[in-house]
Image (cartoon, rainbow, N blue to C red; front, side):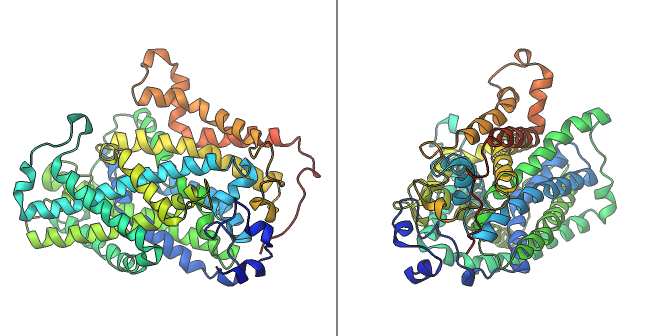
Length: 503
């Protein structure tokens, strides 16, 4: 966006020279808001059709659900998370601002770095997971042609849990991701087009393979639930549902990063309704069908499609499949796990950190989070990753929705979002009420998390407290919403002047 566009947007030199203002964080002018309903539908279809979605559904089967229980859980989870997705998206559409700037209204111009970093760190985790998947796909392809890769000497300490062959391809794929970051976001467009056309076809081909190998859907869908009682089912269902919500918990916060380009509220709302629940459910169904089929075909549950593809006998088929998985994963990684955390890191120092630097930071943290351990088993994937990070993001969503809809009634002072001394300065740039509500929202979840990761024994925590962890996102969202609303009620109308300055 040029200086002329900034001026046309109503920005004077004072705002443009503010340390809180940068090209990446500036509002999008109306002339550049070109995304319609089908753009958002296509965005969600593209992001939903990824390997982690397949693995998410498969992990529910591995955890004991039958096919319809898994599909229902995924549909419910995505329908629930759609609500905060649409609500938080409204501010992005009205004012053209990204998530970190929107968070300044409730957390303060400096306090916004708290939710931005919470969101960025978990995005780094997703970046690491996707990078590991892409790198492992390359490894599976190479080992078909070079079996000696399996016998490389161990280089990393046993504590890392990282074999040499997969580690090499992981770092190669990581370097490819960083090169795309260096080239810029525009370089991913062709990959996204390739993915949008190819991955649905590849997924359907995999499903038809599973059906043909098992002589029809009947044997697959007849696989029973492994739960011995309804009590056992519900004990698994609620944390699994929380995990499904947690799957898109990051996007439910930073959705303004995308809706800031919307032509209208109707476009972003309808696009998300059309794109998110149906595409997640459909691709999850494919994952359920294929994973259930592996029990019949191989006598074991194979919930990782990369591992499954590695079992194919044809070297050419394995190679083509793995290359397509790697390219698809690369496209998703840049679009879903680089753009938003890059904005979040840029918010730390708008004048010093741009998209490229933010992407590099994301890449480094993505390695340090040890993604190969996060997806090593289904229980760790759902219970120690999805639920844990959703509990951190649930309170942020509750605070932001309470502030925008119930305190400010969908009206922001756009200029002051970029001023160090303005309406959103609060106390030294921090809104203490938002911080208090965030902490109070997270606290109920801490005992259950410590118990789940094995840092405290079961005997030290009452069951009713530890079980709150199974409802982490819901509990924390509601607690922070209520606490923030009542703390902020002391602000009078004159303390929160209502202005409509959307551009």
